[in-house]
Image (cartoon, rainbow, N blue to C red; front, side):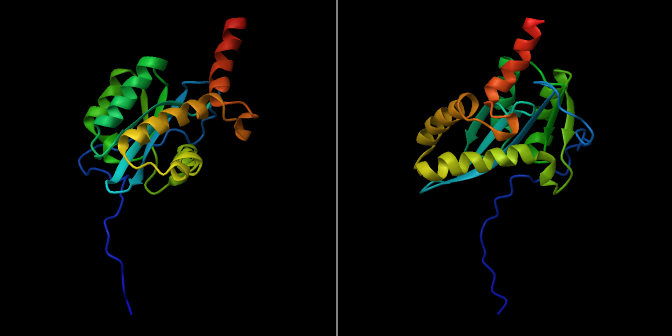
Length: 197
């Protein structure tokens, strides 16, 4: 019958045609220490009576630690820039920063922050979700372990709940891929080795 549903698509990774795209730098890199590579992405969260809001997180790839995050009801780049500035202020600068080709991350204002800190910019290939699979796994974890269970009804309760969840995620949630350490233990353990030597 050729029936098709008509609805707004949640396109969180749409590239702005005038913004530059950078090459993917992580193909043959072994990540060996914290702050070698940071990754970021954003996802959407549906709230009843409000519609969609957007969550961005910045993660250290070595430890899987969530360094900063923000929630916004618009898709502009400002909340992504705020999250980036917070992570840089609290943890210093990584060697490489990897994103997808979404307009928030290819915008001049976002990439300028990275360039000002001497950070090499890496971007996923078009449609290659595997290039940023670790943060895609974070979204699945956050949604199934917190958002879907809590059923947040407004932005305030969502932010409060996420603040609590990310403390749990970083400090108490063990990860099989980290040899059953928490992200914070893995992030700090490398620094503790430096102090001991």
